[in-house]
Image (cartoon, rainbow, N blue to C red; front, side):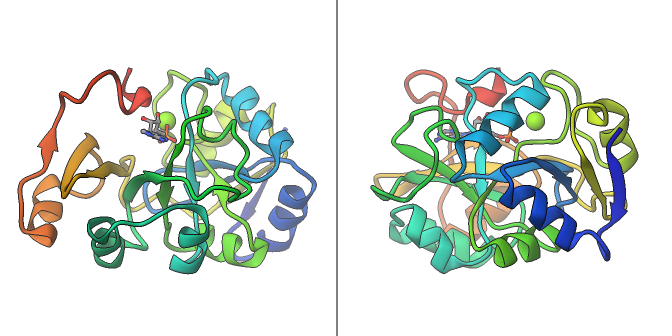
Length: 221
Ligand code: AMP
Ligand code: MG
């Protein structure tokens, strides 16, 4: 059964597990995340395994700061504006990957783009200390609703993971909003913790909704 440690006392233990290629459930401002080192194929594979998540469904990579984000992806001016306006916070940006960024291809399901977010609180501190990005989907079995408490995570995944970091109930309680800049516009790929209207106010134009070719945000299935 997973150990539950409060966020005030869990940092060293969480770092040791992540450095060993293991996964850790962590609080973020959106929902609890199941985190693994995004550059370590074993850690990333363990995320998919613990969740029973299909491997064609890419993960969001979480960063500690803008410098880390820019090592992983190529920013256009609109995406930079959105990052400056909403990070750290519940906004995920889909961007072209920077070649040679070290991200394991399982994270992105082999796509040449990557979904990036900068979380607040414990997750941000953990990533800064690790010095590497964390892949972290919601800490629930695939198909179940996202967990907003450490107890809910432990009840669902406790037999399959070693550590749940307890940061109390997550403040937003919803997944991140996912957007992608394309040719001077921004497309809403998944609604979430930041309202579409707030994003429109920040960029001074309407978001594109729905309708690009194919399913752009497979988690919506
Ligand atoms: P989550 O399940 O909350 O971790 O969110 C992951 C979701 O982000 C995926 O299911 C996709 O919908 C979306 N996503 C991740 N990477 C990409 C990408 N490269 N392009 C488009 N959407 C992505
Ligand atoms: Mg999820």
